[in-house]
Length: 92
Image (tube, rainbow, N blue to C red; front, side):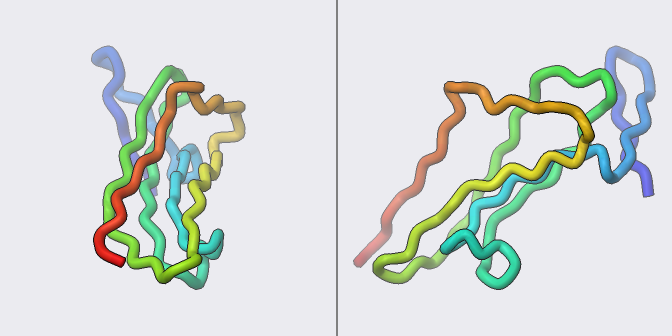
């Protein structure tokens, strides 16, 4: 399977494995606990990109969330210093 991206008018093929996945997981257990995740195909040309994850996670008292970034591109990536994470507590 291949995802194709148009960049500067040129058609660039992005292999499925050339992607970055970001996930927000409860108790650092992305496999067994519900999580919010997003996968973005990255073109070989690189550049700066943003990922936005939105969703609802239901936590119990004492639980925490972790943000994970999985780089499957084979190239180094950097998380910008101004990156942020926010959440809203609804009810107790």
